Image 1 (cartoon, rainbow, N blue to C red):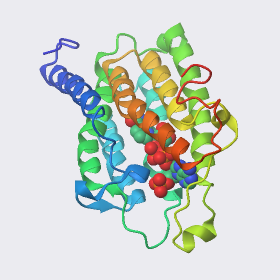
Image 2: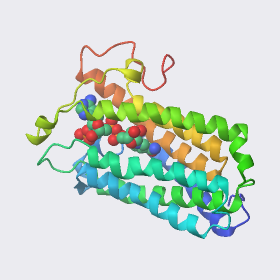
Image 3: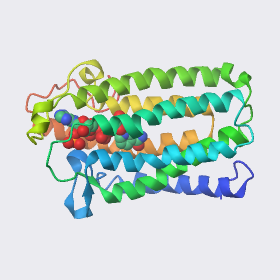
Length: 264
Ligand code: NDP
């Protein structure tokens, strides 16, 4: 078992989190997470994507807020700043993103219930590990941490990348018109503009940079966990998505990389 905090519950759950990252990394070599364009009925019941995303992300908000509310340092400056960051992030990912997704009317669900249930383990651990560390174990919860170079560089990285992530999600969402959605038409089009001029997976690239910034600014096992699990999920999906676009669009721009601008 990892020894990170000296608290047996925290260390046990952090060890479980590490095991989940390893298992996900291996599993993702053999299959794509079944939702969206990679939905597959062989994995059983599927939900409407909006409901699937909402349910899957909900534990991140609940476990964070509950754990936070018991933390001995919860009213100190750094935990309060993290609370703000968390609430903004999950207001978007857990509530606004599902609410605004353009899901064609009347089509059968494309978000596997299996993804939701496995996702619950991940999002619950994510909320717990981050809230408990910030309010109980973080070495410095004073205003001093907010001027530490790790926090400053991490926070800037996180916010800039989240700006790109929101933009990329907006581009993808608006590739389908509201009329098409109302008619139940599920079109896929080629995204353009912003980071999409450089990479196929603009939202994933920005997401991974944002979690790198988050890991730096929180300097915590929870930060490393969400970065690790995001890499395990998104790198293989990015490869499959890039392949999918090249097959679907014969005129797909050849200079567009998979995930990292100018590199890969
Ligand atoms: P996708 O790009 O697969 O889908 C986002 C939405 O856009 C869906 O409604 C999808 O429709 C639609 N869409 C995508 N491509 C097109 C296209 N070419 N034409 C028309 N519509 C399109 O993103 P994800 O759902 O995988 O991710 C959403 C957000 O969640 C991203 O910001 C991502 O970074 C983040 N995420 C984070 C993870 C993590 O581990 N941290 C894991 C997964 C996602 P449809 O559903 O019909 O395909």
